[in-house]
Amino acid sequence: MFDSILIGTDGADGTRSAIAHGLGLADTYGATVHALSVVDTSALALDDDGYDDGHATDVLRQRSNRAVEDIERQATDRGLDVVPAVAAGRPARQILRYADEHDVDLIVMGTRGRKGLARHVMGSVAESVISRSTHPVLTSRATVTPVDPVYDDILLPTDGSAQAARVAEHTFDIAAHYDATVHVFSVIDSSLIQSQELLASLESESEQAVSEMKARGKQAGADVVTRVWRGEPDRCITTYAEAKDIDLITMGTHNRRGLDRFLTATVTERVLRRAPCPVFSLRRESNKP
Image 1 (tube, helix red, strand yellow):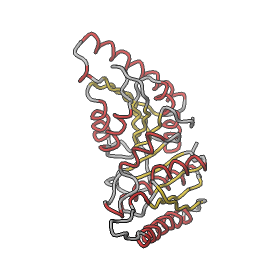
Image 2 (cartoon, helix red, strand yellow):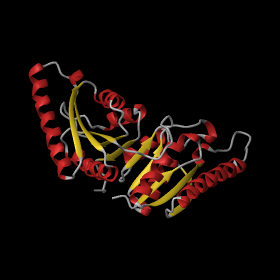
Image 3 (cartoon, one colour):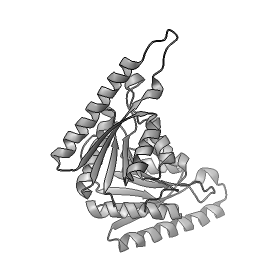
Image 4 (cartoon, helix red, strand yellow):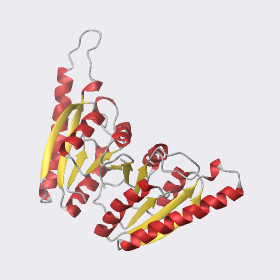
């Protein structure tokens, strides 16, 4: 499923976890690694005295070159094929452009880093990439320990939508490669509902959604457990992930609204900011299976 993986980096410590997960997945799948660093020229401009940012640009480019060389060295040590690249411009735009031009199967990014000219190209940029990417995106926070991925437990939130089913294809494939248990999880957003009758109806729908997903997982040969909770979706997802020591969260986003739909872009963004583990996300319009 993953024949080519794009790893974004700027060399900051905050990227190390993302790099470890990207390389680990590439090793498992035998994928080609694309190592990309973007010199953020949008952060550079002439000041009122006409100061030339040429020197600053050179410094950032040198840093990008070193960051890419570091991934290249690690990938080569693993016996992986690697394609190094340094681009200049707005980070999110360049990452998306590169991913489209090379038709990568997965983008891997960090989500936090330093400030100023040396700032991590991910951070809020990661959210921009996720919201616009036609490719799956895996993000890992800087606080996650940078080790090779061992996905023993994967959390798959579902709301019964077609998008959740598409994410499940990736989830069960990853689970098969890592012999992982998949936790199929549905949340009823009880903060929006007062009617006990409606809550009961939605709980029934959620039970059906996780049951159908469990059957799909069994067909794929995965070990599946199911849970249905009530509460705020993003908090329930991250709380469950912490309580069950989840190694990876896989979730989709779509624009559907309604009391029975919780996998929205807003929920995904909140999960990204608080998740105790990496998050694999797939936007509704993605052209990847």
